[in-house]
Length: 151
Image (tube, rainbow, N blue to C red; front, top):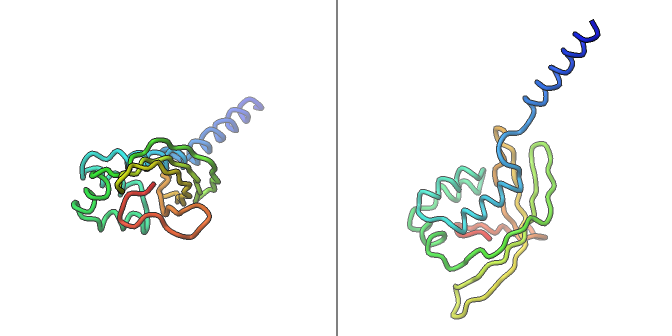
């Protein structure tokens, strides 16, 4: 009888863990994938992947972006990602914040320049998958994304 109760208890624990486990990548992996795709997009079909990785205003901004705007912001590369590191994260049950550091080569001026930036990303859990809701300059309320590349 004790063995049966123990077996039932262990089965319930396994079922509970399987049902409550979040599917998909972690918030940190989601941010890294977004930044990487932003910097390596090859055609306008990649816009769909970026749309799917976002929610709210971020998703709306990509949805409203026409192919020409996407091409100018993401395919005509003037900013190249050189390095990426997650420097902090705070993960809750329904939301997460991930802070990352990037090193980029900026070719928008007459001379190429190397720049380092720290950004903070707000993610929301939607149907078991982490989605990017906002990207801000670390330490401010200023949004980084404005229909253009986000590093």
